[in-house]
Structures are given as C-alpha cells and as structure tokens.
Image (cartoon, rainbow, N blue to C red; front, top):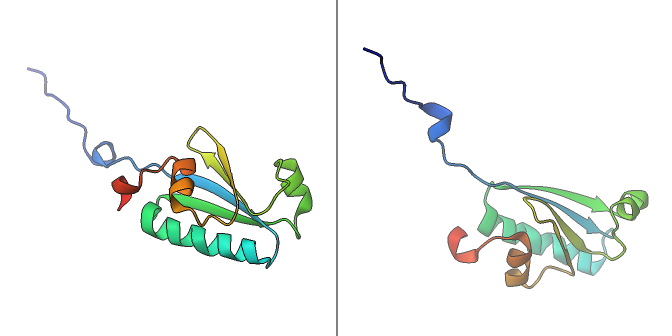
Length: 109
C-alpha cells in the first residue's frame, strides 16, 4: 500500500505580492519632498511590508532618469507587478496613486 505525501511548509504560506516602485525626485524641491512624504504614508497604510521602493534624485543621477524615460519630477514608476505605470505629481491624491499601483484601498485597510 502506497503512502500519500502531503505538502507542508512553504506551499501553505500565503502569497504576498510585492509592489516594486521607483520614485524620481529633484533634490529638495517642494513637490519632491511632498511626494516622498505622501508615498511613505501610502506605503505604511496600504502596502505594509509588501513593497520595495527606490528613490532616485535626478539632480544627482540625471543619466539614470533619462535612460528610464523620466522628464518630469516627481514621477513614481511602478515596475512590478505588471502592468507597469507612471504617476506624475506630488502623490497627494491617494486614490489615484492606489489605482496606478493596482492596489484596492478596502482590501488593504
């Protein structure tokens, strides 16, 4: 008589989607500072530990911004999960930011 094998451990763990983003800012410009603060608040409230964020100062790394196609700051680029998207501005409209990131506000509250 053969024994049945059951999977346990990592297979039973819930799958969490990690949102990978890159925020392009221009030094300490007012809109850039506000975008950073707004995005940090959104991430704390809605994404918890389910995100990775890179902040790129285009004043220090202009070639990186040009290579990534960024011509306006602040710009938030969602890299993954697909589809990729860009959100331009100081990120004060939480609903628009969440929609651009593909996050449903009620599911995360």
